[in-house]
Image (cartoon, rainbow, N blue to C red; front, side):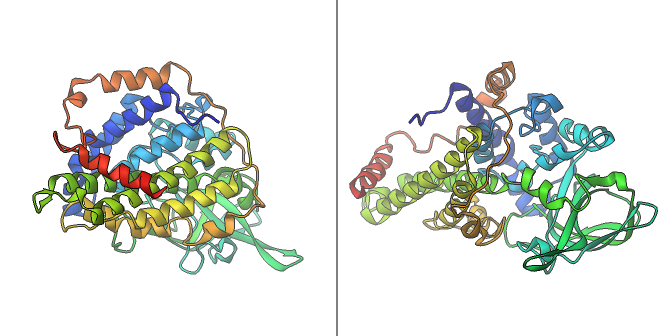
Length: 428
């Protein structure tokens, strides 16, 4: 088996990490203090990503996206996971479900989203329906003239405060099944400002300061039938076809955050001296570091393996669910300690959302051997775009002149990391 990455995949990962360190890290304190991302800052980040040619990397080339395969996109998400979610949100990755757009929907929603001209948000969760999608109470009722009337509430909706339109799932009928009546689900495209549709401030979160959630209310919101995404009552089909990779994304950004925590812990263990030596040389600390990197590496390999299987056209449902569960729980344990008003406090706070995203324990149910085959984009990485874009970006003096936070240990203290790895090998 070959466990290496291609030169282009390495370059993409390095490009994203360099961008995060130079363009995201410096603004995290400001966002933490303000509690939101200033509009000008968000647009500035977005425009820089567009100028780099890295916007919408998760979409195929034929619709104007970057055409990254699943493995390379997972590496990109891992590096974005190092930074504040409130800020990396502006590195646009529109919802893949927009690939289900047809006809005029492609010109109105898909292409503008890929170009960065319009921003989307996905809305499924309700006060009484999270993982139980069929338990949703928000309804869409078709009228004799073909229009739909939407009523109900969605909450904990990420990115809606910036969205120009939302992709919303509604209960649109009932069907009889061997296990009793089940709700039919239909997906709709709803523009901001539609009569009867309102986006309200959501709940104050204990984690991810500046990354807001919103409450969406629908009060007799009328939509033409042309706003149905996919087929009428076909919401589950659209959901299963295009939203399968969400858990892989959650796993990837948990791995990225855990690696940043490990970087901070390793640096601190090298810089902090007690009893005449760096604390990283004490077994009580070095064993913890060894445990941390072992769990992080395991989570990363599970995550990359799930992405690789998708690219190979293999069954991947169980592997993705395993990565999803392992990365979230491992990230929650990847802290030696943290201090107030520093990056480690923010990273510790972010474990709360990471443990909830995608369903608290849903990964255990999804991760069974009865997995499904998911469609995939063809690998389209080997072209001028990402290799050349990465080279040009990394060659910019302003970027190369930035402080390299990946140089974890100060000169003369690299033996602490060696101690950590020697402890790790002794445990195997």
